[in-house]
Structure formats: C-alpha cells, structure tokens
Amino acid sequence: MKDNLSLKSKATRGMVWSAFGTFSSQGTSFAVGIILARILMPSDYGLIGMLAIFFAFSNMIIESGFANALIQKIDRTESDFSTIFFFNLLVSVIIYLILYLSAPLIASFYKTPELTLLTRILSLNLLIGSLSIVQQVRLKILFDFKSIALITLISVVISGIFGVVLALLNFGVWALVAQNLSAVFIKTLLLFYFNNWYPKFLFNLSSLKQLFGFSSKLLIAGLVSTIVNNLYSILIGKIFTPKEVGFYTRARQYPELLSNTLTTILQGVTYPILTSLQNERERMISVYGRLMRVTVFFVIPFLTLFAILAEPFVRLLLTEKWMPVVPLIQWLCFARMITPISALNMNILNAIGRSDLFLKVDLSKLPIFIITIAITVPMGINVVVIGNFITSFISFFINAYYPGKLFGFGVYRQLKEMFPVVLATIIMGTIVIGLIWLIPGDLYKLFFGAVAGIASFLGAAYLLKIEELKEVNGLALQFIQKKTLK
Image (cartoon, rainbow, N blue to C red):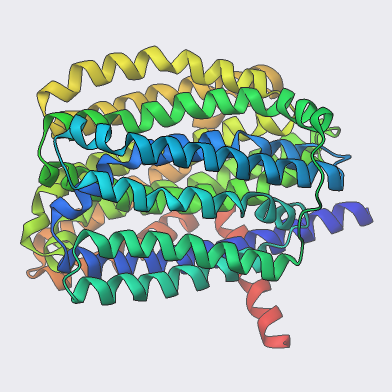
C-alpha cells in the first residue's frame, strides 16, 4: 500500500512539475515566436527549416536510444552512465565534422549559398547538446521533474530575450541561430549545476553492448521516423522557395507546439512510471488507460479550438504577411491531435522492453508515408498537409495494434474512451464557430472565442460526466493547497 501511495505521489508531483515546466517554457517560446515572426521574414524561417532534417537526424544518431535504455534498465551502474556520456560526446564530434565538411554540398543541393555558414555554426548545437543527454536521464530516473522544469524555463527565457534583441538589431536569420545556440548552451550548463554529477573516466564495452541491445531498435525506428517527418521539409525546400518553406515551417510550429507540449509531459513522466511497473501488468494497464483518457481530454479540444481561431490569431498576432499559413495550421492541428495518443501507444512497448515491436510498428508505416509524400508534394503545400493528416490518422490504427494484442486496449476500446470528449469538442466547436461569425474584429474573435471555447467544453464535459474533469480539478486543487501551505 505504501508503494502504491509513493508511486502515485511521484506520478502526481512529476506530472505537475512537468506540466508547469512544459507549459511555462512552451508559453514563453510561443510568445517569443510571435515577436520574432513579426520582425523576421518567412524566408528567415525557411533557411532554418531546410536544415531541420540534418540536425534531427544527427541528434537521433548521437542519442542512439540510450536515454530510454538507461531508464528502462533496472540495475544501471555508474559505469553505464559514464560509458554512454562519452559515447554521446564521441559520436557528436564525428557528426559535427561530417556536417562541417558537407555544408557546401547542402548549400549546393538547395541552391542557397547562405546555408554553408549556417550549417557550420548551428552544428555546434550537436556538440553542446551531447553533454546534456545523460544529465537529463539521471534527473528523470530520480523523478526530479522540478529541476528539469526550472532548467528548461530559464534557458528558454534567456535565449528568447537574446533572439529578440538580435532580431530588433536587424540580424535576420542569425537571430534564430543565436537563440537556438544559447538555449542549448544554457540548458546544458544548468543541468550540470542542478544534477551535480560528472562522468568518471570509464568506458565499458560490455555495458555499451548490453544497452545497445535495447537501444538499437529505438535508434533505427527513430531514424526512420525522423527521415519521414522531415522529408517534407527537404522536398519542399528543394522544389519551393525559402519563403514557401518558411510558411510551412511556421505552420508546423504552432500545432506541434501544442501537441508536443502534452506529449513531452506524458512521455517524460509516464515512461519511468510505466517502466517501474513492467513486472505488474494489471497496474500498468490501469495507469495506461487513465493516461490515455487524460491525453484525449486535453489534446482534442485544445487543438480543435486553435484550428477554429487560426485566422484571427495569424492576422492579429503575426500580421498579414503570414496569412497563407492559416489553412496549413488548421489541417496540421487535426493531424497533431493524434500524435500524443500514438506516442502513448508506442511508449508502453518501450516500457515493457519490447523495442523490437516499436521498430516493427515504425517500419510498417514507412511505405504509407513514402507513397503519400510522392503523391502530395508535387501538388503543392496545401495538399502536403492534407496528406500529413491522412497518414497520421492511419498511423493511429497501426500504433494501437500491439496495445490491443498485448493488453486488450486496442483501437475499439481507445475510440470508445475518446467518444465523450469528441462529443464535447463538437459541441464546443459549434458554439465557437457561430460566435466568431457574429463578432467583428480579430481581437474580439480571438478573446471571446477562446473564453467561450474553454467554458463550453468544460460545461459539456460536466454534463456528459467525463471523469477526467474531476481528476483535473483534483490535481489543480492539490497543487493550489500545497502552494498555500508553503
């Protein structure tokens, strides 16, 4: 009983601090992003967007799935931590040298000479970031999400201020470069300070091999996923202008910010929790089911509301120059609704040590993505995002297969769990669409639309007796009471 209470307490504290850190840091990024978008041009974002796949791919190789492998391993040792630390650093040096030498080829591929220097400078992020991987893993293992939250927030605030100042001084795309570099540097520095851990001069090959047995499947799956997710940017960057790439990059940012916020909270907290329950299947399934319902309760209404309010949001906050992103944002909102749900379905496979199934699921989706990309990219950016939505929808059914087979929590049960929230969201959407149609002025549409959306969803959830409403209220009250007592 004491273990149950301890686990629940850890999960609650972890969820609250992870939520605080993610929402505060993402909220700051959101605000900084709006300011920068008003100052900078779409082409500035397009230049960064062209390089996205190279850095995403490189980060995946550097990390190599070892972060999850360390969390999943119960009897981890100091040798394990130090070995992975030096492995990450060594690989990052190799990757940096490759990108440095390949920078002219990348610029030539896109026919954009500016990319040579941009690639070489931004690649420094890989070296700096490699030092933080094990540090962050150690805090997660200790369920110290408070430190992670504070570190993330501080780095986002300082780097955001730095980026805005340089943008105001007309540094253009280099303001975004400086923001990215300073964020990674500050975060790494703070992780060393808060964690108070330094690697010992140990490198154990047997430890590396043992951990790689688990992480190798995640690495392959991650590489496939990274290539697929960023292939759009490569093809769009090759076919279209930097300005059009900028529209696509910016359109992705807001739905992914909202979707990834929830995904980050859930994956960061739930993976260590589910891993600790890998030998207690009934408790694991119970926790998994509750997490699924809470995920749906937040992600579906919030992204639907943002899709409805996208037009007044863009016109008011980003200005008219960004209006072409409105339909892109709306389609991507519906595509990203599915991302946190799919992430949770995949997370439980890692928690039970089945990275082989994780890989199998990811590889099975690859042909669908390739076919969709081949069909949609020649037809324009608007069709690309519609194709993105279709593949996300199909992926949900594929990702839910093994949870259904292993735990009896497959597509039918998940859809059944989602139905009340979907119904409440439809009620909310109908009210908000009618309201903003009647109200003049983007500011009023945005403000009253957001207030009416939140109020109508919560009201519908209350009438439909959605249990997660009580759970969210309970967590909020618990957090407020703790703060009051302090």
